[in-house]
Image 1: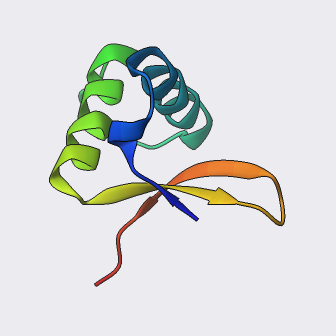
Image 2: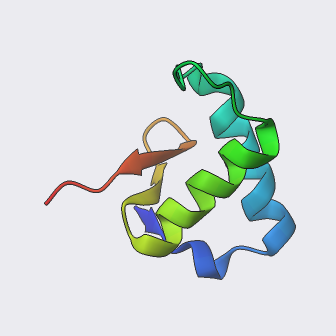
Length: 69
């Protein structure tokens, strides 16, 4: 099930994005980004429609995933 980010309260959305960023362990190259920068990046990806929030009823989990076209 896709959850539109606009339907989440701002604090809930930011907590979800922060949790996602902290568990990803992505390499950002030579320059390390701050947690705030990473959260802002993911938020902008949501706004642009590059990623979406997906809830799995089967696993009762929520994740942020890339949009496939």
